[in-house]
Image (tube, rainbow, N blue to C red; front, side, top):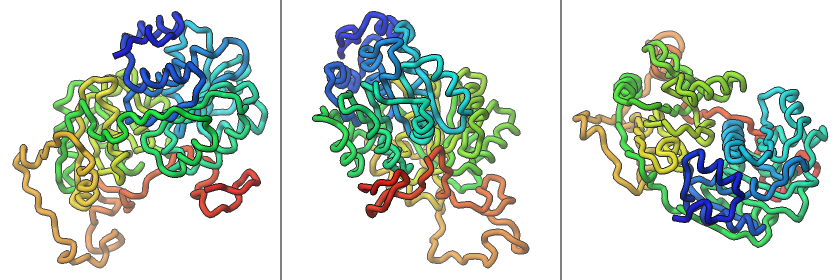
Length: 439
């Protein structure tokens, strides 16, 4: 592997890298940094935890001049990811004199305006709040030399394409741009064709969905039994644990029951205020909390090296979501463990995900001698009052369920900072900036 000092980075950047205990570059860093330093655009495709944040951060820090205005901009889909990227840039730029500001929805505008007024060279932002600053003139992009779109596929899924196009149209034509994405859907490729100039493509690990370094297993159980097994697995772990749930209601329930069992647990979900979310993440990062219970809104914005176990309390509805979840453990080449709880109703979804896992997968039912008896839906009689109400007792879907979802399906996921337009940009309709959408 190539050492960082062989990539041509400034001594003050190498000093910060060495302080963090890094010596050799990861493949995505070894591939992208020299190209970005040469001024050529880059498209990078790599799975989570591969080191792409350092790939674009180090090259940007190397080329930016302190005290000459905003020269670098990183756009990320969620506030958690934006804050994570900012922290990484600050660590790498510790001795450069380069300042970074983070702007995102949910935080008071005044705090961000104060940071911008003190003078910064790099802005890390979510699209919606960045547009707010652009419209009020607190951020100008005329001197931008480096633009990064991180987790581009997530921004597509969250309906940010028009926002991204609006922002990029305000940047100078002469700038270095990089786009990083775990997958490359057609809309992202179209975006890259329009805004990137002769980009060098690095499709590293594009087909590798193995979750290398992660001991993966699953357990098929009744939904009402999940919490008891959750406690059993957590008690066996010495490090930190992340529990992913499909809905904000489930997240609240699981966090509440963990508190009742005297565990130091914190939660992150879409309806929480930004202050409370930051408090939760601060406690988890510092080690004051051992367990983080989160919705998928946080699956791409958590980078805590001590996470030993990830538990999928609910099966995600996409294979890429699964790999982003379990990628919160085994960071930077470490080892980790991931366990997925599969309720009877989620067996079909889990079977689809299993086909994409290209490493050993443990069946805990066999190891633990737990028999699985999945009812045949064609033979099952549906009670007249299945979804609660008076009479007929309480169902697993009603508010009275100990572990249930308050009458909501696991499919009803919460949103996070999704901009102002929740529509998917199709059909050539008018967007909110007065132009016609291309997608």
